[in-house]
Each structure stands twice: as structure tokens, then as C-alpha cells.
Image 1 (cartoon, rainbow, N blue to C red):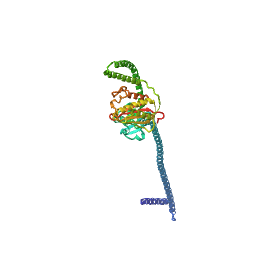
Image 2 (image 1 turned 60 degrees about the horizontal axis):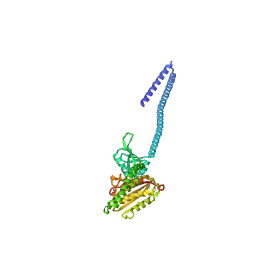
Image 3 (image 1 turned 180 degrees about the vertical axis):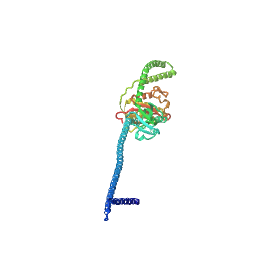
Image 4 (image 1 turned 135 degrees about the vertical axis):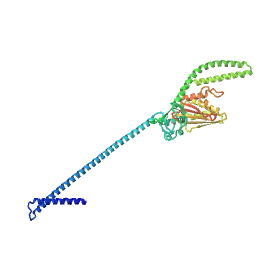
Amino acid sequence: MQGKYFIRVLIISWFVFLGLFAGALLVSKPEGNGVQYVLGGGALLMILVFIVLIRVYILKQRETFKTAGEGKEGSEVGFVVDTFHDLVARLKEKEKELEKLKAFAEEKAVRMEAYNENILQSVPSGVISVDNSTMITSINQAAERILGIDAREVIGRRFDEVFREPLTTLLSEDKTVSRAEYPYATNDRRHIWVGITTSHLKNTSGDKIGIIFVFTDLTDIKALQSQVELKQRLSQLGEMSAGISHELRNSMSVISGYAKLLSKKIEASNKATVDAIQSEINIMDRIISELLAFAKPTFLNMEEVVINELIKETAATVIDGNESVKVAVNSADPLFVKADGLLLRQAFTNLFANAVDAMPDGGSIEVELSSLNRKTEICIKDTGCGIPEEIKQKIFLPFYTTKQEGTGLGLALVHKIIVSHGGSIEVGGKEGEGAIFRIMLPAGERGQL
């Protein structure tokens, strides 16, 4: 700072000296009154004024340049600020566009999910999906209806906690099957046939993330198939038995005639032999009559039948006088079926008679009746010897019997009567623990639920 003052004083002193020198030169003659000094001072003042003007001009130019620089700097800052604000505005616009695209994608995903769910719930086949940890992830309405379950209660639970054989075996073996047919006992105590197809559930990368079960209810189809097969067998049997019975009865008539002649001519000691011949002929004639009756087409006289009362009356007739056998019919409400009452009575008579024969030392017969999905189920359980597993598939065949005096047409006739009504009959239970016969019949108009 002191350096600047020293320079300024030096410059002023220099200009004063120049002014005095210039004033002396301007005066040609020196005068005693000092006029030359006045002129020199005037010249000095003029120089000083000139210097001040130049100084002022220089300062103004500096201020001008400084202002211009500041303006330039300000314009550059403003450009940067304006560019930043413009970029932010564009980013906000892009953000709004991205939000719109995101909302559209989410809405589309929701629509697709709802659409896929609607398809899944609308297909008539049952569909169940299970993840790799055997947890149930989804069940559609058809599966709920067929298997008698509630999706809200089973989703999220382990598969083997909800379902039983053969579904659990298919899952544990982790193999795919195509339209395999299996019997299945539902949670609501129905015995159905299901056609099952299984496949691995994979993600977009091809990795296995679970298993899908697709199945259909084949119960009605199986019942219809049984009716068709039975009609075919009866038709073939009828054609064959008609010719055979005619030939047998002709020969039996001749033998019976000769037996009667012998009974009149032989001694009393040999009469028992002739009577035995006549007895065997009568048994053969009864078998032929039953065969013809079995093979004959069945004509149904359909009516509304209270199945509770019919079973109670039939059981009472079969058990009459046998106090060692107890019968219990468990049904609070009357159940109606549309059927031929006489034929049903004949079928249940054969079933109760077989149950009594299986309990020579006495026991109990329990009949449970229930109605669901326009079907009436009759379950007959006894405490007899049961039926061996290896013959369960044969007991409804004509002439198949394990009794020494049986004709093998009793259960075959039961099967024929039940199937001709559009129903089905199955045998269960274990050997030594008693037999179980489950009969399904179409419910009557007053018995439909």
C-alpha cells in the first residue's frame, strides 16, 4: 500500500516539474512581477486536468470491462442454471412416463394374472399345483368339487397332510403319468374314480419348481362302463343259456321220468338213491331257472323309494328270529331314491343273507346312509370273516362262489340290479375284520341336495 502512495507522489512531483519547466519556456522574457510563474502554474493545472481526465477515462473503462466481465460470467452461470433446470424438468417428464409405464405394466400383469386365474377356475378338470417342498400352492374350483375339499383350508399345507393314496404315492415317486385311472376316497366319504395326469411345473429357465396334478371325475363314466359291460355279458349269457337250458332240461326231463319209474319198482333199501337223483335234478332245474332269470333283461318299475324304510324292513325279514345278529341303521333323515322297490329289496336281501352266513356265531350289521351331490350312499358293514383280497374282483361274476351249496348268482344278481339302476357297488374291508359293501344310487327328486 505504501509503495502505491510513493509512486503516486513521485509521478505528481514529476508532472509539477514538467509544468514549471514548460511555464519557463513559454515566457520569452522574464519579468520581475512573476508572470512566468503564473503561466507555468496554469500550464501545470492544465496538465493535471488532462491527467485527471485520462485517469477518469481509464477508471470508467475498467469499470466497463469489469461490468462486462461480470455480465459475461453471470450469463455463463445463468446458462448453466437454465440447462440444469431444463434437465431436471426433462428428468421429471421421463419419471412421469416411467411411472405411467410401470402402472400400465402392473395393471397388465394384474389383468393377465386375473385372466389366468379365471381360466384355471373355469376349466372342468381339477388342477392342483405343488411346489418342490410338497406345499400346496393352488387349487381350482373343479378340484374342490371333485375331491370334496376347501381351497382356503388346504393351500399352504403339505400335500400328504391333505390327500391320501394313490395321490401321495405319485408325488413321492416324482414321476409323470398320463390319464392313469385310480379309485380314491374323498374327504367327504365318497368313493370315486379319477383320471390323473401329472407333469413337472417349470419356470422360464426350465428349472423344476413343482408338480401339477390334472384330474377328472370318472365315476359316472365307470358306472356307465359297468352297465355297458354288464349288458354285453348278459346278452352273451342269455343267448348261450337259452340254448343250453333247453338241451339240459330235455335230458333232465328224461332222467326225472326214469327216476320216477325206478322209485316205483325198486326195493325200499334203494329208494334213497333214487330220491337223491331226483333231488339233484331239482337243484339243476333251479340253477337253470336262476340263470335264465339272471340273463333275462331287467325292466324297472321306477318310483320314489324311502331307502331307510326299505333297508329296515328287509333286514328285519332276513334277521327274523336270529337274536345273535344285531342290525343298526344310522340315518336321521329319510333319504329317497328313484328305483324299483321290489328289485332293490331282492338285492338287499341277498346282501344281508350273505352277511348273516359270514357270522355263524353272531355279530352285528351296521348300515350308514348319506346323500351328497345327487347321490345316495348305502354302506353295509358286518363283523364276519371278511373277503380275501384276491377274490374281491371275482365275487360279482356269475357262478363264482366260495360256498359249497351256493350257485354263485346271488352277488351277481345284486350287481346287476344296482348297475341297472345307474348305480355302483364296491366291496371293501379286510379278511378277518368283516366285509364292507358301498352302494351308490341316484337320489330321488325329494332326496337331492
